[in-house]
Length: 306
Image (cartoon, rainbow, N blue to C red; front, side):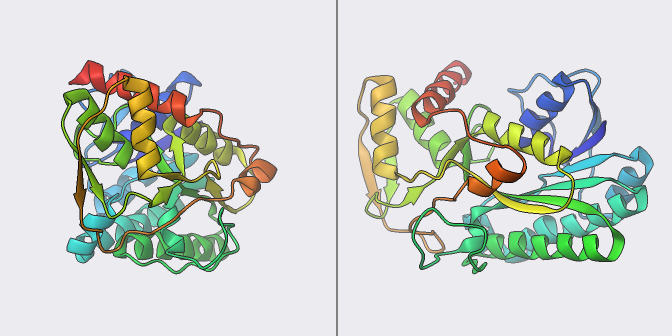
């Protein structure tokens, strides 16, 4: 298989590149940013330093002629999107449209799209959330991701470009947090490594569904082989509060750090957990890494890097 990974020099993308390379596939990365310093890039991986929201990106996809495009390039931050909605839409949504057009011209078989739990907003339903719940995002980032799913559906209907839209829960793991890609697990882990205070926004009872990055890699590879279009959650289905996350790190590190309470941030979803049943029934995906094991691996990696 020939594959392009947009945003492949970033946190999740670099792990997907590794997974594809280890399986013997030909891989090209399209990313405006250089590879993460903590990543040992496989020598055979093609590097295209391109802005995803440009004609040059389209041309590269057409010339490379990939079987599958794994599209991760985005401004992956709710706070950033609130402060910079135009730039968020340019990269996250307009970038997707350029990728879709390049893939259409290249006669690509499949687009595997990194969507997000942010498309659901704050639904008034019991957790975990199923894919049938209406999309009601409450941040520009969530709007961009939700609109991207609509573009995938339209390109499939008009041009026959098959897609898998994977709505990620909160992804964490090694390589996150040292080069601007935050994530609360990375932020908290870094604080514990440096023995610095943890900043806790709101009452600490906000919950998220944390999924380890290697599980997300498996979901992407399975989705790339699925026949037909699919929109599914990639998640564990379990809620973990920020307070519980801190306690897990205390267990892993066997020490406490000071906690600084901060005001709640606008645009933050109160509770989120995604039902993983559809992914299991369709693409055959189930999460396999426990939160305790995943945080241990993340903390251990962070300790080596700092």
